[in-house]
Length: 241
Image 1 (spheres, rainbow, N blue to C red):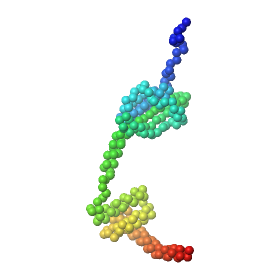
Image 2 (cartoon, helix red, strand yellow):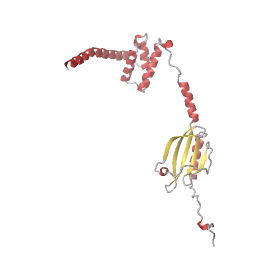
Image 3 (cartoon, rainbow, N blue to C red):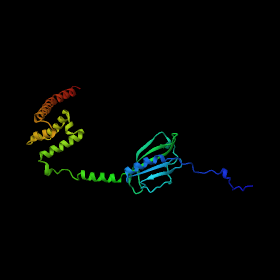
Image 4 (cartoon, rainbow, N blue to C red):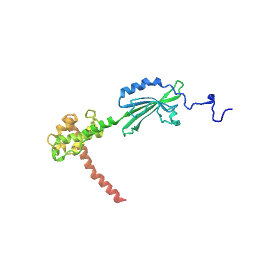
């Protein structure tokens, strides 16, 4: 008679499940890791046993056989094949940009995940360096340039092109009309050589510039004449009421 603590070998059940064969994906992961080395860690996760089946460029210090910590959340088994890109972080604070793709077996069952963790710290540093070079600490000092018409034209052109989200070569007639109106309000055409410099900046001839400028001034004069009439009509209407 067996003691209560004895177990029959035939009834012994292993807690570990059979690991899925994910090796077919290893050549792909190796290629990705080689292309992005040393900036990307590439991991193949075994979803059945929640373990790491393969890892390349392992800057997280994880190794094959370590827990994946994916858990058994039902959302991991949805039809969504690609998750991300999404943000992660390394323990030393580095920012990671990650993406995960579901891996399926021959029967279409989801058995794993391929995850790519791209270390963004070098890119972030390069962006900060470029931003430092591209920005200025103080605005243009008026004392140096308030009499420089060319600089004023350049600044107005820059602001208007940014506002319109266009290049000089893609400007329409209405765009040019808007920019010329801005130059007019800034009294640029009153300055010496203002007209030829603006024409050059806009890439048009002086005759074309004069035509647009004349049209703007005529419209302005007409609006100024009509304004008192409208004001008078409004006043009479209010008095009657």
